[in-house]
Structures are given as structure tokens and as C-alpha cells.
Image (cartoon, rainbow, N blue to C red; front, side):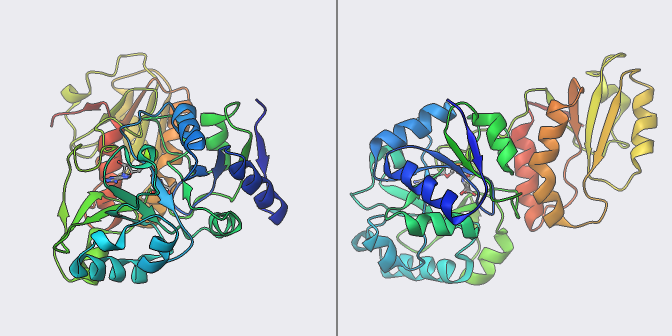
Length: 354
Ligand code: TXA
Ligand code: MG
């Protein structure tokens, strides 16, 4: 199958909508990461999403809509209002009013029209209204909501531009809608609200815990368990090369902890601390005669820039000549820093002890 990358024109949106109406799947831009879209009510399309991504069906999908009230979600056949208590509704209302369209996903009781494949058989459905104008336009042109997981092969690094989608899924899908580089670069935050209106964070993401707390006026629990959000596996977002996540900055890490670097290894480093890349180079020179690539992502102390560049930097190091990748831990745990460290932790198969 030949994969066409389409410019973000009205005509391309029509072509993509037609493909979705026929039960096909299309790579689409969102403000967070690129998605692999299919008609949420079409079981054939849903099956394609799972097979194209090589994704296990225990990992449920996010439904993308272009409306932002609970009544609209009910009318679209996504959620089930009568299974929601007033407390649950009022907390969901607040989050939708504040963060939609945008990078926040809500887990709510599902409408019976939603196929089990979308929710992995659970009685809840994850839903969000994306902010990217091309995604919104496509959803409004289709007369159904769109199921869309990230457009990468299962477990791999999420795609943040059309070219990334092409590398991940090229030859497997007919169209990728090119909406430019993702503005946010990290997936949406996933929040579940229970019948008592208590919010739980299932996946840290682009909207920070602090922001959600300030809107809801309560403390957010972070449920870092596979059971709460089936897709939250420990090994995810992973490059093909081994990625070692350090406990301390590179310069503070004992040389003994870096024994996995052999004398001739080519090494890539994802750096976040203040030290100059050449200090890292100098220390690495004692350990290897191989080529060294250092990507310093936090020089301007701007969390949003790190989020935007994190996956693409991992991807660059993965396709560089480096044989091993070393990542410093992210030095800031507040705001977006929490989600950045979450992705680093899941991307690393190996963690350095001290
Ligand atoms: O930013 C995003 O959310 C992107 C863009 C494309 O919208 N999508 C995305 O989808 O990240 P995906 O499939 O890569 O991640 C969906 C996450 C998974 O961790 C899954 O377990 C969780 O959402 N999820 C989906 N439905 C759920 C449910 N009913 N209950 C709990 N977690 C759910
Ligand atoms: Mg994903």
C-alpha cells in the first residue's frame, strides 16, 4: 500500500473523511501527538487500528469529539448521562469548560452505542476534544466521533510530525494528514472521575496536576497502576536502542554506574541539567572512543519546549549512530515536568541505580 502525506487543505480533509466513512484509517494531527483515526462506531475500522499499530486489544482507545458539553457527548452516543451522579457531572463539566478543546482526556461512563473494542470491554470510555484545527475540522466533516490512539507501533515513541507517522506506519495506511509539528508534543492527561466526583489521574500529560487541581478545588490522586488505565505499561514510548535513565545528572553519576558503556560504544545523551555539553563529552571520553552525541533540551529552562521536543529528540537519538542512549532524569517534577519524567521512565528499559 502506498502512503500519501496530504497537505492540510479542505480537499485533503474531504479525502480523509471519505476514507473514514469507508471504514479506513488515517493518520491525523492533533496538538498533542499524531493519532491513527477511525470511525468509532465501525468495528472494521477499529480492528484495523489495532492491527496497523500491532496494539493488543486490552488497551482501550480515546474517542475524539468536536463538542464540549455532557449533553453533546450523550447525543453523539459517546457517554451515558444516566449513569452519572450530579457530583460526577459537575466535576466533568468544570474540566470540559476549562480545558476543551485541549490536551485533557476524561474517562466517563460509556454509551451502549460504543463498541467494546473501543473500551476493551470496560463500562467507561475515554473522550477528548482536540484543539488542532485540522483534527476539529475533520471530526466536524465526518458525522461520527473518531477513535484515535497515537499513530505509532505499539510501545514505540509517539509521533509528533507527519514524517514520524510515515516512519511508523508507512505502507500500512493510505493517508496521513500533515498538520505540522505538534504544538504540545506530549499526550493528553487522562483523568477518571468516580461517582463521588473524586478525580484520579490515570496518565500524566500535557495539562499539569496543579492546573487540574486548581479547577476542581480538590487534590488529585495519581493511580500509577496498569489496572486503572490498561495502556499504562511500564515499557512504553521506547526507542529501539537501549535507553538508560540516570538517577542523578550525568556529571554527578559515578563512573562505576556507567559500566554499560564499552570502550568503543557510540553514545547518545539526552541532557537536561545545566552542565555544558562539552563537560559531558569530556567525562564520556574517559569511557569510550566512540562517537558521542549530546542533545541538551532544557537550556532555556522552558518546560513547554522540552515537552515539544522530547519524543522527536528520542527519535533522533534512536536513528543516530548511537548504540546506547543515556537520559538524565528530568530536574523539575512540577507542572509538565511530572509528565516528562513519566515518559522518560517508561521509555527506559534500564534504570541506573544511583
Ligand atoms: O494526546 C492523546 O491523548 C493522543 C492523541 C492522538 O489524542 N492519544 C493517545 O492515545 O495518547 P493512546 O491510545 O496512545 O493512549 C490512550 C490511553 C491509554 O493509556 C489507555 O489505557 C487510556 O488512554 N484509556 C483509554 N480508555 C480508557 C478507559 N476507559 N479507562 C482508563 N483508561 C483508558
Ligand atoms: Mg500511545
